[in-house]
Each structure stands twice: as C-alpha cells, then as structure tokens.
Picture 1 (cartoon, rainbow, N blue to C red):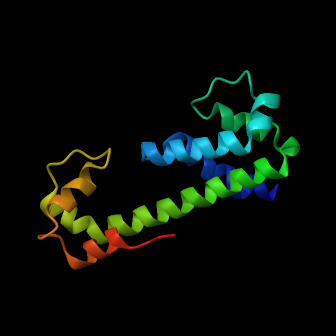
Picture 2 (picture 1 turned 135 degrees about the horizontal axis):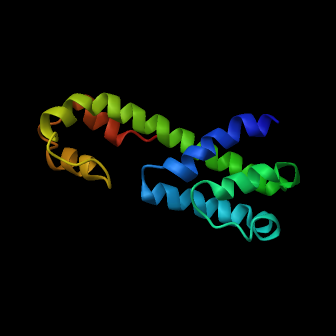
Length: 135
C-alpha cells in the first residue's frame, strides 16, 4: 500500500510525461532491466505506451519481486530529483530565458543551448544553477 502511494504517482510522470527523451529512456531501460521477470510473466501482452505498462505493474503490485519494487522506487527517486533540479534551474533562470531566449521554442534542450550560447549575458544565479551538481 505504501509503495502505491509513493512510487506509482511519480512513475506516472516518468512513463507518461518525462520532459527529456534521454531521461525517459534511461528510466524505461532501468525498469525494463529491474523488472524483466515481471514484464515477461505478467505484462508480456501489454503494448507499451500510454501508461499501460504502469497499469500492469499496478495490477500485479502484490506479486512484484523485491528487485522490481526496488527498481520502481529507484526510478521514482531519480525522477523526483530530476524534477526538483529542473524546477530550481527554471526558477533561477526564468528572467534570463525571458530576456535572452524568448524567441526559442521550448523542448529538446533548446533553451539550455540558448542560455549556454549567451553565457556572457546570463545572470550569475542562472549560471550557478545550471552548473550545480544535483546528485
């Protein structure tokens, strides 16, 4: 029950709304490896996408191995840390984005590329946020 309350809502975001394709692939690969047995045993007929795999894990929650449950927890913690870091950088760089990169379409790292290209004009707070180590 505790796992459902903590892990599954965060994984909904990871498997459904992750902003970075790289981050999403990494989390998906982590889950594929850590829950390989469960995927083969309970979810082999599930077509990935649109949170169907997550629904399968949820439906078989009481049968998940410790390894799979731990992997799902680790994936949720990784995503949580990434979201916190992203929120921090977004807050610190908001004015710089508006001032220097307003004409850039968001997505696929274009805003970060813009801020890096205009590094000499970017505020010290934004520069610091983009170089902080969030591990």
